[in-house]
Amino acid sequence: MQTVAIVGVGLIGGSFGLALKKAGFGGPILGVSSPATIEAALRRGAIDQGLPLADAAARADLIYLAQPIGRILDTLRRLDDLVRPGTLITDAGSTKSAIVAAARLHLRRGLFLGGHPMAGKEKRGVAEADADLFRGRTYVLTPELGQMLETPCAVEFLAWIRRIGAVPVVLNAQEHDRIVSFTSHLPQLAATALAATVAEHAGDSLSVAGPGLTDTTRLALSSFDLWRDILATNSGPIEQALAAYITKLEHLRDNLRTREIEGEFEIAAALAATLRK
Image (cartoon, rainbow, N blue to C red; front, side, top):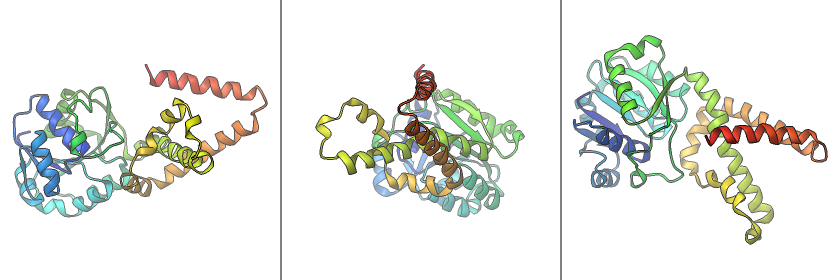
């Protein structure tokens, strides 16, 4: 891996550039983004040079797509003519099935390896980039074929994933999307629904709220611009996750006066404790 091009130098793309440098990568890191973002990324040291997509793709042997999902899909439609044969193309999109399908349809010269680092913040942009963002975090990879991970470029990329402190996990795209509908997308929508409900029914009484409301509505700070594409490209699994959650809420409602609810508290506490280990 000699030259890296990061397409979309925001929070994730900028953090990837910073993480590579901290881990010892010495090659040039090229950035493809808006002029303002390129300027900010250069100041942060996340990239070494800003270029148009065609110029960056022609030079890079790793292309890292860290845009919103809709823009990743658009980039995949026009990338194949721009890359050198054998270039490794990966992404950091939060859903995988649509992206993997687009790569299968549009890429011929480049090799594609889907990815999703399970890391982020409520705030966006390269100003929030952090070289340690991926440290200790799961980094999901979704190869279409298992032997893809045995190619020299994928082996080297995996080595860098480990060097930046992430923990690789291999899943197929459909299983990834099913799991994150519960572990990522449902928490976001639950926080959004909770905050919206409180706003509508007690929004003028927040002086009576404790820290629990602050904790449980943290994700409600997330931008819809980021989540629009996630919801659109994973709507089926998300609908199933919401249905399961609604069923659980109805069960709690129906058992407010019975000991049945005690078991739900125990199950929930066990999961919460596991997450905090």
